[in-house]
Image 1 (tube, rainbow over the protein chains, first blue to last red):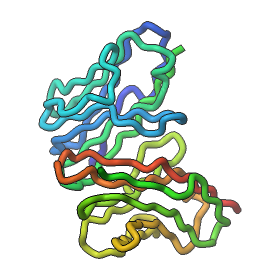
Image 2 (image 1 turned 120 degrees about the vertical axis):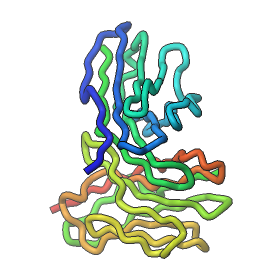
Image 3 (image 1 turned 45 degrees about the horizontal axis):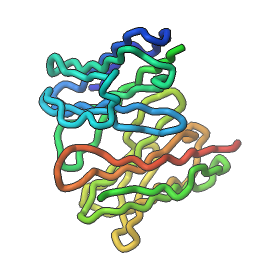
Image 4 (image 1 turned 90 degrees about the vertical axis):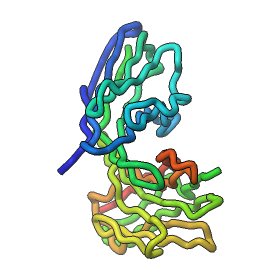
Length: 114
Length: 115
């Protein structure tokens, strides 16, 4: 049963620290998305990649967030420095292509910045 | 531009009674539409999808949805609610003809199931 995996599942850190979240998309999926979910804002798209190339990161605060795909099996989202307002659940999702395909979501990383 | 509106932020039903979660969409072309479910502290799981085949779509766990172009609606139904159906439900539309793969999410409907 192919699944998107994310690590860590939970992260508590102090303000100013660097946070790195990792995602392994489903094998063969060429498009990867990063979302952030909060009670106030709901689900927000941060960035996404196709064939490892970034296509859109307009949803990301550029000064502190960065997203990369070092290879086809790993996507990373980094926050440096972290702030309390970054506390949220971060989801990774992958899909096989474009044109209305469904996305498969990982279990999320719950980030708490104190 | 594509958009989706979930008409109820919260729905409460009794166990064993029907469920209706309402969703209207806006799209300038024939969209792909989805319903996702999110149980507490879990990721989003695909319930069902419509991609211009049959207008009545059956999903997992007894859920189904009907695509009505004339009403621009894609309501989610289930004949008999179970306690395990209590969750957040998202109506979703594919972005558009640019083939980005992006999805547009509704604000979500919280389904409460009372014993």
